[in-house]
Image (cartoon, rainbow, N blue to C red; front, side):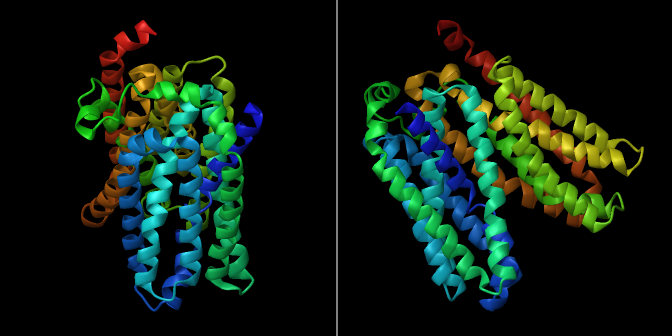
Length: 390
């Protein structure tokens, strides 16, 4: 039964990734059909991101009351409803309306499911599960592209993803008894009641891990969004090659997480996080070296590989660093910090690139990386007594 539940959780992580890149893939067709501005995709993205922040912060209370299984099933159902809502939307305001349940569902399942895996499974499963997210994020645009190229439009693409989400929702509801079998272990997550946001932030090391997670997601999203433009505008690389290596960046993260699952057998979460940070640093140095464009391309690939272990290992190490009883609340605020990093930092670099110069791209990544390294080190110092007690 445990293996069946793990398989279902793998499917849930694929489901998490499926809708994530759909908007970017479909928007060139959507904004024309809806007779709106190309820039309005940013508004939808902000609504989705705001929803994920809110639901991540509420994840501790929701999980405490309903349990991970129900939260996961209901959240995927909300995402499925949002996908169908998108497919039926005939105006921009309707997209904004359906973006609300999309964001709320995505944030709840992300925080609750990550905590469940951190508590009940090994670090290698956490890495492989996030690899599954990467597969879902890669398949989503492919499905959308299939319907767009076939002349059936973006509405059918969203409808297809919605159907897949409905199937998974049914599987999750059927699987609820399997989650209950593990409930006694899960029940040890809380002492008496959910923690308030003020109480969570007051825990030693939480501010530092929030900044760490903010920096990681800021670095990943900024690299993914602006790498191609940097290679074209500063390095003079043709747009086709730049676009290919920008996609390799995300493929590198996915492949890196698959490999990281095997590395967890030999190395601890903290060691793998530091390795990842070191590989990112090498990638940034490679992009800065004035020795030809090939090094810049290699640097981008290295940054992708370096990103691979950090997210899953930070999540998986949360119960060890802060205690099982506080992990759900802390993972919730970590997720919220991650989404804030996604919202704030890539657009900020866009302003820097537009008003100063895009050549500052590696320097910007370096500053984010430096702050991440310092904050993660400070968190380890402040939570050392908990790990020693364990």
